[in-house]
Amino acid sequence: MSALTSDSTQLYVYSLQNENGLIMSVTNLGGKIISLWVPDKDGTLGNIVLGYDSIKRYRKGNPYFGAIIGRYGNRIAMGKFQLDGKEYQLAINNPPNALHGGPKGFHNQLWLVEPFQNNGFDALALRYKSADGEEGYPGTMDVKVVYTLTDQNELVIDYEATTDKATIVNLTHHSFFNLAGEGTRDILDHELIINADRFTPVDEGLIPTGEWKSVAETPFDFRESHRIGQRIGQEDQQLMFGKGYDHNWILNRKSNELSLAAKVKEPNSGRVMEVWTTEPGLQFYSGNFLDGKDNGFSGKPYNFRTAFCLEAQHFPDSPNHKEFPSTELKPGEVYKQKTVYRFSRTK
Image (cartoon, rainbow, N blue to C red; front, side, top):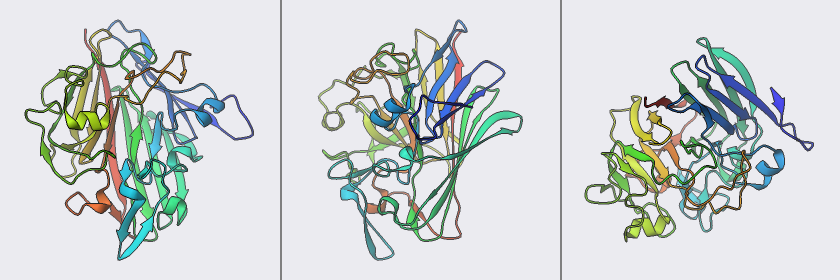
């Protein structure tokens, strides 16, 4: 454990390593993964996630790089929802909507972190107690997130939460990936598969319309491998709304089983990443709002579309769509989900 260059805030960095040389660093601020070193086809390690090297940058830069997102990942329309006949108003931080739990969401909180061995693998248990009324959400919620780095080159993320009052919850992980290496080039040549026959179209505010639309004959069909940049410039209304890809795919899966959600390959480095999850949805974001104003971990600017996100989740704005899988959590229930990022390389 080491400290980031610091102000008065107690921020620390924890490092995990497996027997194959993968190294991951995590800070207690938002549970953020600040670096993840993965070998390429030649065995050379490279950092594949966006992040910063100081507290100042984490305080003033992109708040979501590598973070745990909650209470509610993604958007809630107008920051409003009803539960048990009562309307709740959330903090608005993506006008006119609420995004990723609000400005003081889980990504900006200090988590209690405990390093331990999980079945012989380096792991971190991160805990946070979210107070009743925090950012407008009802109920005191106890959250535990476990990061495990296995010798199968997997980053396993286990989520668990309980509440003392009916509330809503949609936790996810928000690393920005570039399998060619952080700060190197855009991600348009990455080859992507998403295991989904349908997606949820959005309006201009990126709020789902409620439709479950087939991906067939659209730029959203990644059932077979396509370069991310292959169709991103097409004159498609949904792409225009998102300024590229920023949408939720409805995953093909059985019940709550751990299932393959996506696979990404970067042809030059040979790095491959699979995403497995128990969640029903996957948000694919193609880095459309990166603008080069951020200099990251390596000191290089994070330019337009130089990273992508694959966020396993329940659907955006679910509390306002009865046709979507429920995100309600009641006292006595335990919220659980698992997401796995699995890394390999071509020979």
